[in-house]
Length: 101
Image (cartoon, rainbow, N blue to C red; front, side, top):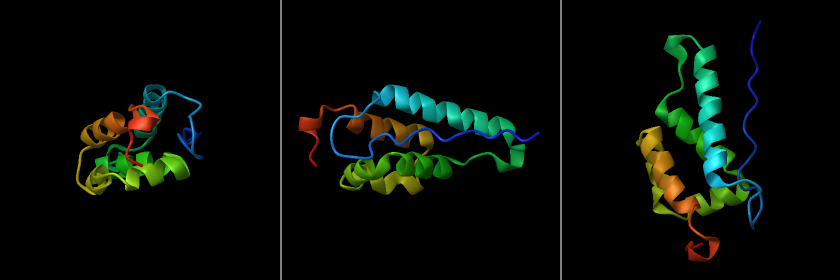
């Protein structure tokens, strides 16, 4: 039997307030990665770069726009998931009016 794990919902599809707190959404994403890795053979575990790509893609249209306007987006291909998610967390935890975009 193959286990199908649903992706977490997009964090921010549209401009405005999100429906879920950043910390809760990131916890859901981390749980998705854990469950995914548990179902894959050890040679197929998700890499940090794959996890960073998932994080970027699942931000949603507006979340991705905000991320791409920030210099931390460039580190997605080279940073560990722990570092990239911490950098992104610092940004998305800011009150909206303090973000530069």
